[in-house]
Length: 250
Image 1 (cartoon, rainbow, N blue to C red):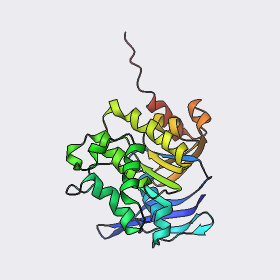
Image 2: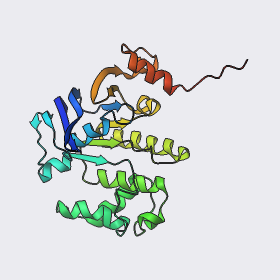
Image 3: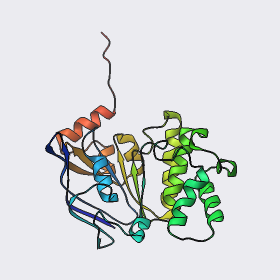
Image 4: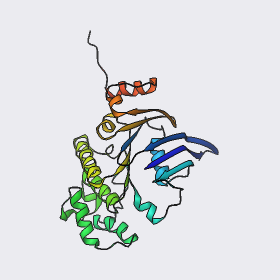
């Protein structure tokens, strides 16, 4: 479904070029959930934004054997949608939830808008009374449910998830992860999930790419991750760090 070959992203800062991602290659099969993991600044979110067409890249990206550049048609946008990390920042504060969900339907000229909005809210576990509220009137978990509903309202085949639970309280992170898992099956989605949390990717993903300073260090199957069967020292360090610290009492 998705083929990434030699993807690189450069940014300019302070009059110099910074290589944020360097020659990354991987493929994602149809129906697979693929994880991209790494510490802050490793380039994982930049990869997702490049795939979404939000930042310029070099290399080759194909979706369903179709080359994709940064300029995307409406049809391209409909196939691939992105859920951002911060649900409050990704929703317009002066738009109601109804406005946010209607907008993509109006842009794409789709019919039966009211029925589609109602169904989208129900799909993510929100009630009809949430429809005409503003983002500040919802909890963080409810806002992320709205963001997920908006991303799925055009019935995409690919969903890109940029740390979808990291801005949420720990108490509701599991709810959102379970919702994503359920919707992935219902919509038969191909997903790329970016996270710094190995527990999250182990819960949702089939395979995982380990990133460090813009480079892809290692590709792992989820069973290898769970059994700590990594080849690279950096991956083993990440796995060890995810298990926390053991305090020795003397």
